Every structure is written in structure tokens, then in C-alpha cells.
Image 1 (cartoon, rainbow, N blue to C red):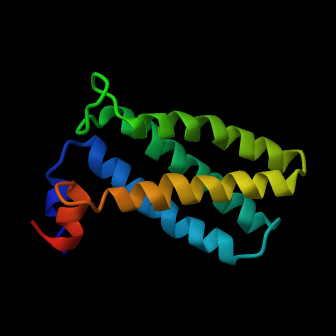
Image 2 (cartoon, rainbow, N blue to C red):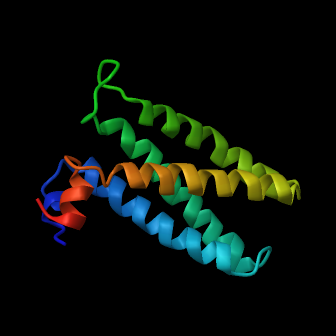
Length: 132
């Protein structure tokens, strides 16, 4: 395992990857920790900011080009940027079940599933984890 392929990439890529990895770890902490507490809300806001950073930074990553400079992953970024404020609003309105469902969906889809695709051969994270 070597971070060299990631650190040698265009600046948006390490920003995107480190924000995603941080959001993944913080998301696991959020799932395990008590809900509705001040630490949960504080870490939740940090998680939302990390996810926004992941989504926004993706718009400067164009390694997979299917429609001009864009790929289907950019649709996931738009979805994420739409759902994050909705999830926060649901929590604010005490609609906890909706908040939980949206946050789990974002974690699962935008971090776990999308993250697994970054491990495919030819991708930078594949080189980081498995070597060149």
C-alpha cells in the first residue's frame, strides 16, 4: 500500500479521496454512537461538510468521460448535494426516521458503493491499495 499514486494526482483527487475516507470513518462512528446527543449533532455537521466536500470536489475529476467531461458518478454528486440539506432539515423537524433513512442511503451509496468502484483495476485507489 502506497499513497504515492494518490498524492501524485491532480489536487482535486486527494482532496476528494481524503474527505471520503474521513467521512467513511466518521460515518461508522455516527452509526455506533448514541443518537440525538450534542456529540452526534456536532459530528453530524462535520460529516455533512465532508460529504459536501466529496461531492463538490468530484466536479473537478474527469477521468471517466461518458458525456463530455462528465460521468454517471457526477449524478450521484448532484443527488448527494440535494439530499444532504434535506436530511439535515428532516432532523431539524424531528422526522428522525426520514433523517436516518437518507443518511444511511448516502453513506451506503455515496461512500460504500461508490468507494468499491474506486478499487477497480486502472483506478488510482486500486493502485494505492493493491499497488501498481
